[in-house]
Amino acid sequence: MTVGETQEVSILIKALPVDSGRLYVNDVARPGGYLKAELTDKYGNALPGYELNSSKDISGETLRAPML
Image (cartoon, rainbow, N blue to C red):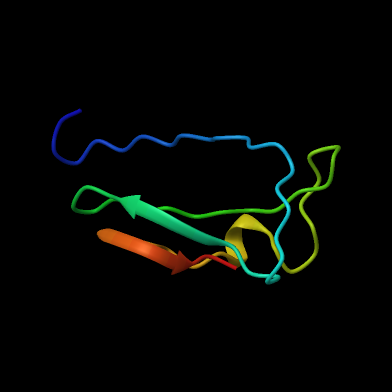
């Protein structure tokens, strides 16, 4: 990639048990990059309140950053 070029990537992860009701991530994003998350049902439909546009942008190098 070159400066100013963007790339969107999607990763689908199978259902995970979440005991605390929170989702935490570890991330290393390049300058200008960020991570967002969306929770979906088994059909791929976004869960109300957990849509991609409601997600926080996580940038830089993070350890156990709260996503949702």
